[in-house]
Length: 174
Ligand code: SF4
Ligand code: SF4
Ligand code: SF4
Image (cartoon, rainbow, N blue to C red; front, side, top):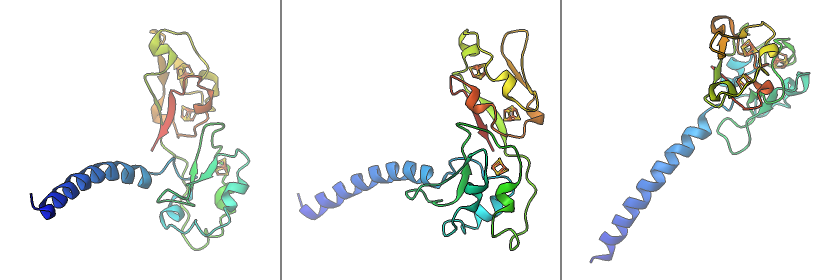
């Protein structure tokens, strides 16, 4: 066989495989890890955070602001991590951001909605009510079927319930 053809076929298949894996990696690397801190999504979209000293991170007394890592397309841009606390919408992050005077600040008190996964103990016939008292707006209840009933309409995605769940069943989706 003509070695040129063989090499080009191999290159084609390798390229196709890399392409598929590459597509998955690309999808992960451009997807935000979590929602933007309230009021800062326009700034984050402008990709101007990577050269900042992260004043928002320092200002957050709940320690829920993290920065996308260096190997992520959004590196340096802040996102909310609810693994230990929720956001109280105190506005300290936007108040301490040096860019707020240059970019019109949105008043965002809606980070998304809570989502329950199938790992919720109640869905697996295990009694648990850990998240019920964690919601500052008292939106989480048990229904007659011993399943969670969440008033999603009024959920602002604060993430306060996320860390209360021993089954890691709760997350916030934009
Ligand atoms: S609004 Fe307050 S609690 Fe929420 S991310 Fe900003 S500084 Fe942290
Ligand atoms: S249900 Fe919504 S408003 Fe209540 S704690 Fe969870 S994320 Fe926050
Ligand atoms: S804390 Fe988690 S496992 Fe327990 S009821 Fe709430 S969502 Fe389900």
